[in-house]
Length: 218
Ligand code: AP5
Image (cartoon, rainbow, N blue to C red):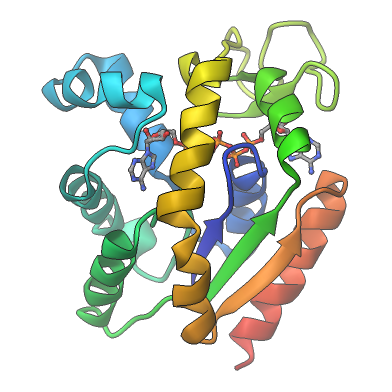
């Protein structure tokens, strides 16, 4: 099953993608994490995309599609994936449709995670992430057991450069102008479910599982 998590920065896509992917037995694929891995590795691609990511700007469709199709071609994604942060433009969505159609697959469900903007700002400015396993924490809502240390892998937690106020505003604007049109795109395709993301994480997971279970029986 191919599931897309749509939603603004800080909606909880990364937090939920891992849980949902475990339940569905497919990988969670985040284009943001793929790009951050390239930046951390110092690769040529990482050097090229770093300034876009740090500033909160979208990477070009061409570069994003290239990294995503490489990842989707791995064997663990043959039967499905939870896509977190992809697609983000109508061009990316149509390219994904073509990519999946070539494998006789399609997007099965799109979960549009809705959270009010004031809550998004609180979440992003208080977020700490693990650079190794990408677990996400929050200084008030989701604290690690040992301060500054990832519960899952023991690495030191960091704050993302694009969680500065100025970059957050650019990310929110890009979301409104370039990603929000995907709600209509997938609504017309009949695969969209809106999820209230302003609830405790377990309740959000339950709502997502319900939506994907019902998609599985269609
Ligand atoms: P990406 O990494 O995808 O960032 P994003 O979409 O801005 O999303 P975030 O990771 O900020 O938030 P999230 O929704 O995953 O929330 P999280 O679970 O962490 O992309 C980064 C950059 O890469 C882009 O700006 C762009 O430059 C580039 N890029 C990536 N994909 C691209 C694409 N397709 N095209 C072009 N460029 C692309 O949660 C946030 C916080 O809230 C955490 O602290 C968490 O603990 C807390 N939290 C989560 N859920 C809850 C809850 N239910 N209640 C309370 N707190 C919660």
